[in-house]
Length: 444
Image (cartoon, rainbow, N blue to C red):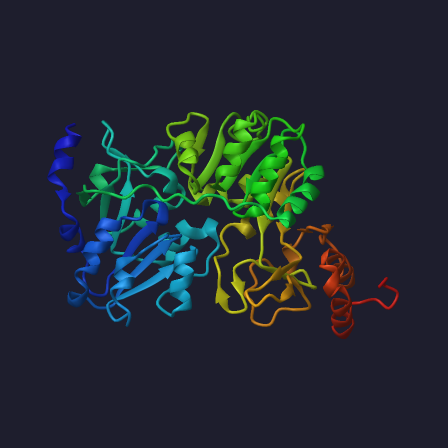
């Protein structure tokens, strides 16, 4: 078949792509890594022609012209599945909204609960078989755009191509229009330098790792610090099965620690759903036979995770209360990020033989006002609970690690206070007493 002829017949301009959108439509923007900026700019140019156009996105790094051009929100309404720093600022300003979700259910939301009309998404250039590779956003891309009545592909020659078992490609026959143009480089999100607390927390986790363990690492200083520490350890034959792949895994590979040889599923292959990092990371993933990108509905499935022995999940949070409730996405009512896959991996790792799931947080923080505040609090009042106390297992701060699994309220309070910054321990004990979760015989 002459796929190139079909490709040429579907070529259009960004303005022609934007013309597919009608007032009242739901529009899918995919993720920030494959954000179709040319189509977004063209849609923004139609502002005065349109009303009540609703847009979904995920970790978009901005600017989103459709939002920026419409301060009143009369024409475009934007909602994020998981906030980047840019999207967080939009929400702070009341110019965007948040979609609560559990990441593994993303495909289900669209299959059973959401109907969308037009999709704009970047992809790598079409291959000789008529397929566009959805690159480092493949884990979420088809779930978000695959059922739209019109799909527009914005071609980006800079995107790496990743191999997958399914869900990583979109065929020209399913595409309404193809847009070519001067696309921007792939967004790079370098890791921040680990803090002394991050390094200390990572050091506490090392004794829980064994040769052949399979790792899931979230975003943040602790996973990055852990990568550096593992690189200089005696551990070997580690595996990767992760929602998000960052530069920490590249560091493990370069150190010879990441071989994937002893994984229970896809031995010899590192598995991921999305990737965010530096150009060096993207170059490593590009057409790498040792890497498979798969839908998040599979990667984050607790049953799938549980089938790998010694599965270690490492994520972070904003704060923990004395009951073991975990807030990982808000500061009070302020949306910071999103639930993501934390619950998925908490569940799956705890079901794995020899597996463990860690939630990491510095015991305290110093605000812009110079005041130190505890990240272990008596109880939440308005903070969004990401992980319930019934699924709180290993909590780690720079002061140690506590296992809350099966522990009573007084045991949790005692363990968590021992992890708190020394400055706040006395007031936390007093709060625990007032909340009737402190035994009279407990040590002070």
